[in-house]
Image (cartoon, rainbow, N blue to C red; front, side, top):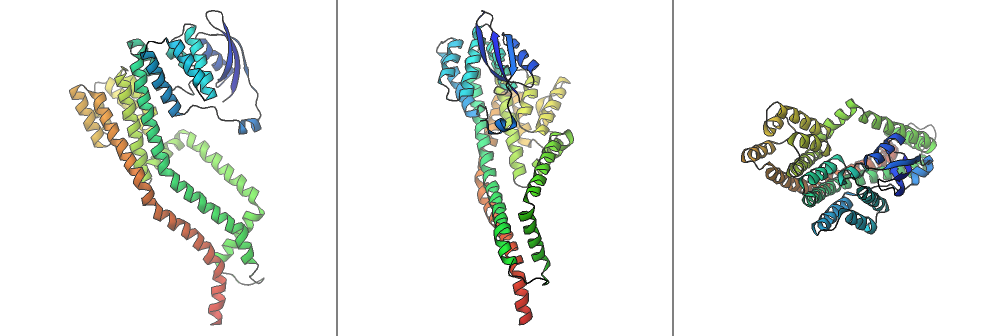
Length: 401
C-alpha cells in the first residue's frame, strides 16, 4: 500500500505533519478530512521495489493493541483527560509507528474530533469492530468499560492465534527440513553416485528418475525457481478470486485433524466477538455483520450475514445458525438458552471459553499425534533416494550371485 506524507491544519489553526498509508491520494485526503483536519499537502513517498523489499513492516501487534486498550481504560478511569492519555501513551510506546499514530490521534481529538472518528483514519491498526465498540462506548458514556472489554477480546484473539501457530509450526519445520535434505542430496550426493555408474549401463527406472531430477536441479535451478514463483503467484491470485476463495475455505475445513482445529478456531472467534459487541450495546444485526468477518472464515461470515437477514424476518439467532454443519449443536443450544434467559452475551462467553479450551487441548496433543507421521515422512523421502542410488549395485550383485 502506498505511503503518503501530509501537512495539515486542525480546527484551531495549528499545523501538523506526518505519514499515512492509503490506497490512493484521494483516500488519504478523505481520511484526514474525516478526523477534522484540512489537508494542505499530501504527496506519495516514492519507493523502489528494492526499498520496499527491505523496509521494515509498519505494523502493530495484537498484544500492543491490547495493552494500549487496557492502559487507556485505566487512565480514563482515574479522570485523566482523553487527549493527555493518548499523548502520554504515544510518548511511551516503543513501537515508533504506533507512537506516531497515537500522537496523531491525540492531535485529532484535541482539534475537536471524537475518538472513534480519529481511529477511522488508521484502518490498518483499528478494524471496524474496534471502531464500532469505541463509538458505542462514547454514545453510552462507558468508554472505559468498552476499552477493557476490547482488551479482553484482543487477549483471547492473541491466545487463539498463538495456539494455531503452535499447532502448525512443527509440521512446517519438518516439511521444510525434509525439502532441504532432499535438495542437498540431489545437488551434492547424487552426482557422486552417478560417477560410479559406467556409461551406457542399463539403470533401473527409479535411479534414472533420481539422476534426471538431480541434473535438472543442478543445471536449470533458476528455471525451477521461476516455475515455483509463477505457481505460487497463480495460486495466490486464484485464491483471491471468489471461486478460489470458496474452494480454499471448504478445503481447509475438510483437512484431516487441522480442519476441525480451524473450524473450532473460527467459531470461537465469532462467538467471542459477538459477545463483546452485544455487551458493548451494539445492535444484534450490526453485531452479526461485524462478528462474521472477524472469525477469519468466509463461510462463517456468510452464515452470520444470512443470520442477520433471517433475524430481520423475525427469526432468532439459534434457529438461524443450527441449519448448517459449521457450528456445533452445542453452540446453537447455548445461544437458545441465552435468548430465553435474556443473557445472551454471558452464554456466548461461556461457549467461547469452552471452545478456547478445546482448541488449546487439540494443539497440545497435535504435536505428539503428528510426530510419528512426520518422522515417517522424512524417513520415506531419504529412504527412497538412498534405495534409488543403491539399486543398481544390488542388481549387479544379484546377477553375479
